[in-house]
Length: 163
Ligand code: ADP
Image 1 (cartoon, rainbow, N blue to C red):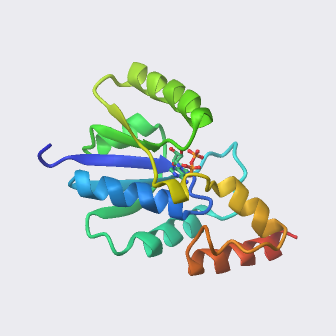
Image 2: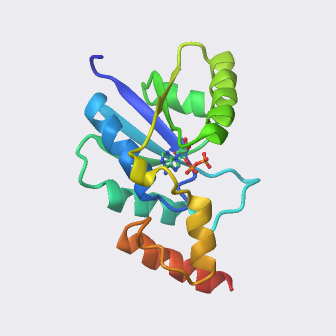
Image 3: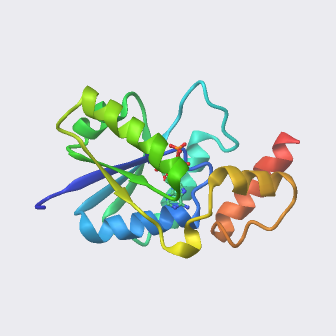
């Protein structure tokens, strides 16, 4: 795959070790990985778009071929604008599989030239979800096994702000 670019979209609310594991695998296979942080106006986030982008940038700064940007508009349009023919999604379990197959099929209908690539995380990260991390943070639990230190601090701040 010469000059291959792949877009990895998600909420990243917050970015976890699971996301980071997927990015590190993709960064070895593709020339460039664009992590695209979504902001769906119908969705409620704990962290703002700027916070989610900034934390992902901090956590992924060690990869020279990874960039983090905000995702506006339709994913397939964003991919084309970024000269990416691939979209990356992570699969943790069968729930992800059924959701992601639907997502990939819809995107293929919208834009047949864009291919969705699925990757699985290393076993130790397979159970991590941003939703559960937020839930643990809301209940004052220790989230450090699942996210970076700066992410944990920012999340704890956001929880206090929201209470
Ligand atoms: P979304 O709101 O689009 O589900 P997420 O930020 O939760 O966004 O996840 C983005 C992508 O990363 C999805 O494909 C999701 O399945 C994947 N993902 C999330 N957590 C993990 C994990 N622990 N291991 C592997 N993939 C993951």
